[in-house]
Length: 157
Image 1 (cartoon, rainbow, N blue to C red):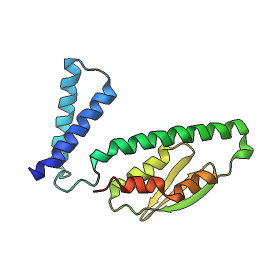
Image 2: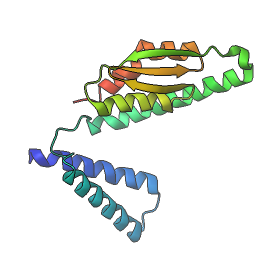
Image 3: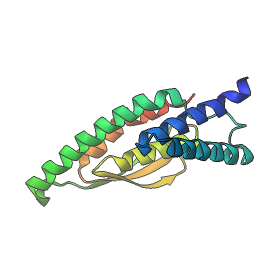
Image 4: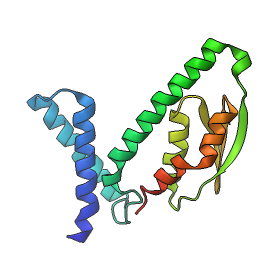
């Protein structure tokens, strides 16, 4: 049963993702969602992705997603403030942040989370660091404080 746990977790995650994004719950759409989930599971198994332990605890993703959405909204408000104040309020900065995550997937989640947050962009993943551009040095400083990094680390098993 332990070897089925990753398959079941992925199947539940994919089905919930399908349902939340489609918005259609008719029989045809539900069957298509089930078929696409089955196809992804089959491809994942053939690629050997389900034989190794999953580098993310899917049970922790909803809490992280809610926190990230809050950060995205706050960053949007900050970017709008800078737009209203004009170019003089910007203080662009580039910095390198450490990547203490032990799995490639969680490193990518961290870099993508930085890019999803308005005003910051991950420029390059380079070994154990990510290079980041920020519209304002304060945004880079907030990333250097490490809250986002800690939350991504909490996704690891």
